[in-house]
Image (tube, rainbow, N blue to C red; front, side, top):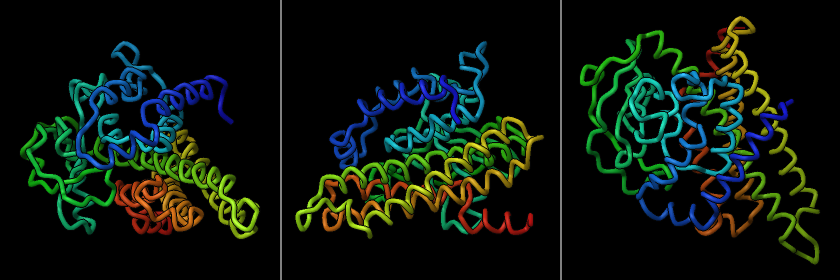
Length: 321
């Protein structure tokens, strides 16, 4: 159960995000590669990037349990931008915490683990790239790179780059890099829970409004089952993500790696299957560009590829049995 303060914090952010990223603005953003720096600064002013920084460093001094609640709201609202990279870099990269810097990530482990090329998100907006390598963390100015013409998620432009750890300045050890990968997995899981919830909310709203054969489609058993299954997957993933965050805050309470893998695995499934359910419930309208259902599904697919694939996390959990 969330505390009263956590519920108030979530409600405040949800209200701000609903104003900042309404459907019309999301549609407009999906049709251009421009980056809204005012909205980015707005996230910083709400304390999103400095959540876990100590108060004497300009942060809020909170833990990961509070952070994943806010990250779920970012995912639910489909907020564009490298929020995970900038959050992780706060306190290490100047300007990250207050929104002056936009920090994207390049995880060399993802490339070595089967990725085809080094790829970064939001290449034109990013001011810095942090390379997460087995040997440590390295920061360098974001290179000039042309985004792919047809990104999978129109709200997440990507580009292939040629950068190496030795090109940057070391800002963290191998242990720091390993922790960033754990934190990144849990933060991405929280974003995925938000994506799953957002897709479900959209589908439920449509199911209550769309009428066929003189009945709202939400009264049809087949539609009810789809939505109920999506709700169960989302709630399970949310619980796993909160547990993982609590374990990261208190490592003696469990195995952080197992908790992170469980959260990412369940959240990826909830988001991708929830996104497909959202498209299906919308029927023919679900395949149109104007309806936001496709944006939730595409965001889920993109986030499945970062901080460990489903196969990698499943293998780790199987090995731990």
